[in-house]
Image (cartoon, rainbow, N blue to C red; front, side):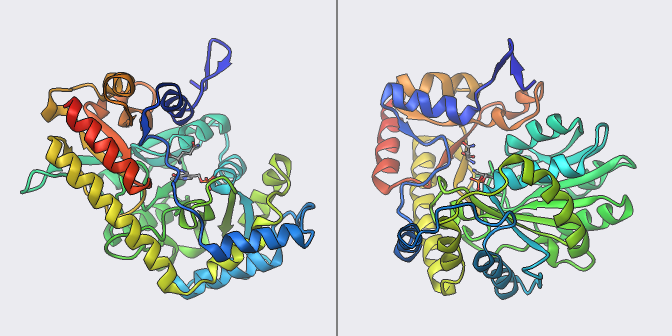
Length: 389
Ligand code: PMP
Ligand code: GLN
């Protein structure tokens, strides 16, 4: 399903952002922020360019960055990694995920993810020749009528088999903002151990949490040795265009992943690496301020959508809320998202974009709307949706 008529199928994000540009619609689709990076992070990149750090960095990343990543994991989560052998920088989480899946999955191996899932996962599993197994994220209404998303422990356990090579965890989760609770993470660790599977965890939204703090699966007993942890600077520091990501894992896994990464990009982002190192060592209050500011925009969007008549999820983390358009008489969010830019002047992503081919019907009347945008953008989007509804 990667190709259509011999041509690469554009990602839903590229297509919907193009639609926003074409129609002048407000873009609550693709998840990139309107904010500027923290001043010290931006200044550090400018200084690094001026200081001449413009040539290939080492393949595994600049020492200053690898040390900052190890330090960050130790300070926030109590996880100890050797920066020389257990940490590597990548071209965003995107390359980290690609190199990891391509290195570790052989044709016919099973890979477990939640469903819906970040769309790159299905593409990578297909590129590696793997078999994609999914665990459904379920939905129901809360007492006040909001949308509650969840995952059942039985469903998690049932997705594993003797052919499971890898389980790809994403918490906080894109597209739902769900954070996996400790029981779910524990079940994953147990099943991975039982089937001798590797855990890969995508934690790019680790600092964008609005309630309980992020819990990395690698901190659970018995998990660290079989876990490849992936994160990125893009979301935390509002620098999605810099493409600085990283991996922490035991040395044998780092070596296997490097074997692929060296043929993908070799290395990238020289001046951005020391700048991200500066960001990672900011005081914790600076991270909390970033999350608090985003939380206010989450509330602005979800309160507004609820007032207009959508059933909404109030996510615990991340960039996105899920809205159910069924109460407005719209049962097919995919069709709605095609019409919405012209009809209402707002772009959203149908949740169906995050399901396997053939499973998109499961997403029904749900769409994903981004709140990592300026207050003005969110307010104007709400006014437009209200006029349309
Ligand atoms: N994983 C998830 C869950 C994401 O949402 C994104 C970006 N939106 C990525 C990975 C890619 O991260 P990066 O931009 O660092 O390549
Ligand atoms: N991760 C971003 C999102 O979910 C998009 C990244 C991309 O365009 N590849 O909106």
